[in-house]
Length: 351
Image 1 (cartoon, rainbow, N blue to C red):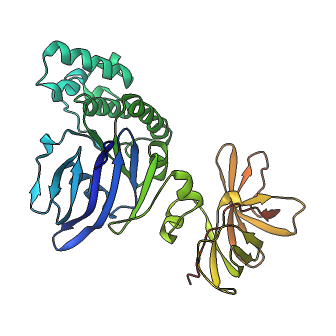
Image 2: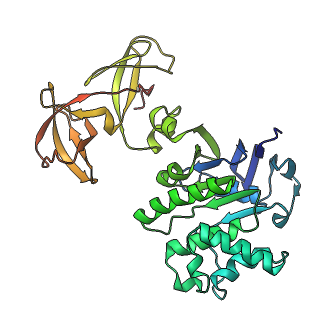
Image 3: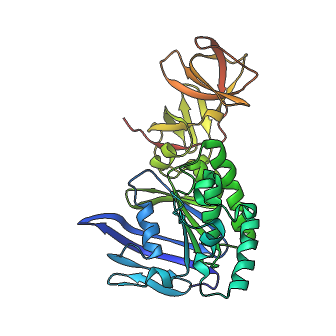
């Protein structure tokens, strides 16, 4: 294990009954980094987190934490001995304890003076120091999650695990809190693993994101790479918005579609004339009043600075396109568009 590697998950298998819910999964986390496991419900991501924390046994593989094997088949170091902090979806605060007592709870072995000073520092850093004498029911959802984060950080864990920590919050708050939490963790130098089904949460916190499906990691990458260069069709479908347009290979890195020829780095090894599906993102379709291609607007969704239009070509093919919001068109109107795809993402035809 390298000196700066905090967590090494090697080919782990986790079962529920006789069914493998995590199957040969591996990844590692470097010191001070923030990573995320992203995937739909039932993909096994929370089971992975519970296995790292010591709450779920391994049927195969092993987990190394801080240079020490903490889990393998037939052996599991007790959760309280792993120096792992956890933040849950429901924050799990003690309702009968004030904020300061909730955060101090994990510091019972420290002397009172030292613990109180540390807690005050952490509460100030997460922005709730003025709430230290309140009870959890007197706090908003965002404030409760900040307190839960403070409680998890107070014992200075080797690793912080977060399980869908923002899913109970409204969209605007979860986005703002996500970036705030990322800044706090980077400032503290805390190594962290987040699991979520929400890609906005993953992109707000995760420097690297692993997309999970069926108990496996389909692709690791930065948010940019996962969006623009998905290596698997599931990743292309799950990340962002887009549609698959039928295409035909003309040459390596050149595909013909009904919107024109798309060129780029083509990772698919296929021959000339091969039937392909080309991933077209909303930002690949740009408005152009002079374009030869005309499309009819069938739906629109206002998103502030932009409007997401669903467009239907004469062939019946539907596309998504982002227009600046000052270009406000009504449903049923015809608009000129052109293809401006800077990333060629293709997969074998999926009928």
